[in-house]
Length: 276
Image (cartoon, rainbow, N blue to C red; front, side):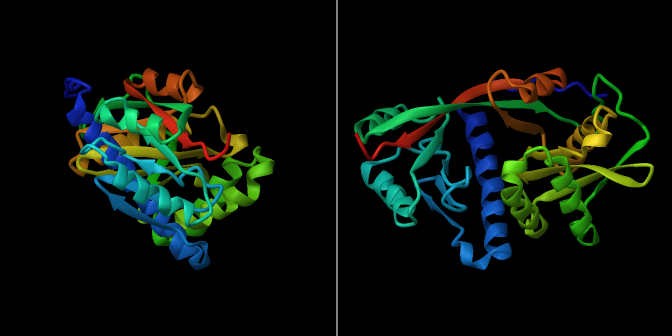
C-alpha cells in the first residue's frame, strides 16, 4: 500500500475542504428542490460564499465558506442575510478559523454570536488503501444504482429508526437522497441490505456522509466496509484527500481518527441575533 504524507492544514487545504462541503450541500439542496418542488430550496453564491436554503428548520440552511476564498464586505454579508430573511429563516454561518481575519470582526459588528463547533477531519487516500482493521469480508459494498433507490432509502430510514421524533424529517431525507446526484453506497450481508453511506466529490476532495446501519446488523463491520470502499473508490476517481465533519469529542470523531483522519481545524457556527 502506498503511504501518502498528510498535507499541512493551511489556507489552501481549508479552501479545498470548504468548497467540497459547499458543493456537497448544494447537491442536496438541488435534490430537495427536485423531490419537493414547493419547498423553495435553492442556493446562491456571493463572494465565494455558498448560501443554502433547504427549509426553515433544516440544519443545511446556512452558509459554507464565508470569508475563505476572499474577504467578505458588509454589502456581501447584507445580501446573504437578506437571502435567508426573505425566506423566513434564521441566518447562520459556519466559518473556518482560516477565513480572512476581517470576517470575524464583521460578524461581531453585525450582531452575531457563536453557537456551535464542528471538527473538520481529513486524510490522504490512494486506490490501494487498506484500513488498519480488516473489514468483514462477508459484507459486500456496491455503488447505488437507479434501481436501488427505493431499497437504499428504506435501508437508510431503518438505520435511523431510533430517532422517532425525527422520523418525518428522515423520511423526507430519504426521498431527497434518492433524487441527489451524490454518490450513494449500499452494504449487504448474505444478499440483505444492511447499511448505507454517501459521498460527494469536488476538487479532488471526497466528502463522506450519510452513514446508517439497520439496528439488527450493527457491530458486524458494515460501516468499516463502507468506509474503505468509499475511500478507494474516491481515489480511483482522482481524489487525494477524504474529509468528514463531526461534533468535537464525539464517537464519530473517535472512529474517524481510528482510521487515519486528523483534525484540520474546528469551525464555529455563528447566528445572527435579531432580538435583545
